[in-house]
Length: 400
Image (cartoon, rainbow, N blue to C red; front, top):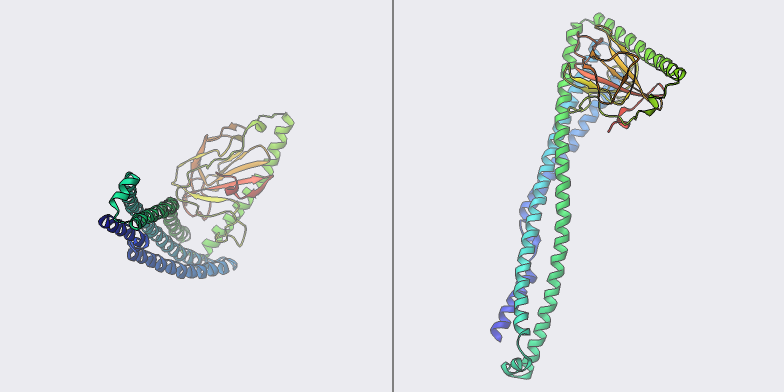
């Protein structure tokens, strides 16, 4: 009896003293310290990024000169390089967080396994006691007091058993939460990798933009100003033509009594795959010509010659082939919506024809000196607009 009681007491002591936090705590603390250090570095770099953003905004508010434009591009390149560092640190931070959570999950799983084995041993002891008859227990006891001691001890085992069962349930709940944290971090990791890739693509585009401007101007201020004037005139004419033609075509369709357009859905899709992200956003504060006009759409970096799809079914209002100038396609849709596809190097549709959603309508352009690129282009990309009642709106509010 004393031997059995001693064994059970040892088991109880082991269960009560076991704490999951002590398992691998030093390693988790070390990971958390690294995470904190990287977060501090991220905060420091972000302050430098803000300084570049402020400098860019100030320079953009001033008159555009070749020297100033190149200076802005240098600042944007430096800002993007810092942004890449932030994204790399963020990627490393998430990786460390995954390691810390995985280690914590491993500790909790081991804790559950350990507690289950101890619970099983306690159950075995209780079961041995329960299997004895009352007369057998009394016969084995040297006194009635020893018999009641054993009953009290049995009650203590049962209470400890319930306590440990509750602890296992608590740890299982914590484990489920940590596994959800792990899944969330893995999702963040995928996004962080995409963000990093996008930022690297943006850096390539910005460096290419600088080289393109240098190539087109040959460091001549007069040539730059001439190209700038032509580019602004070209954009103003395109904007007026787009607005006037849309109104004219809608009036014509209404006069014809055609309701075909109204039967088409306007659930937009991306006209090209934005795998490299965006190089310029709607009303982008870093747009290089913002001093003269707001950027009316989004620029999606894409290899020269890539296929362009109609973002929704509609009616081609214009397919403008401007030779080496700015070529574009406009499609009108129901509910007063229209889409514009700019810097196209090839046009596969004609005006006054209907197109279906996803239909190939042309090819990406934008490389300086190529067909449809226009003046002072920044490299191959699709300029994409969505207009509501003739007014440019943010395409990201309509795209999936």
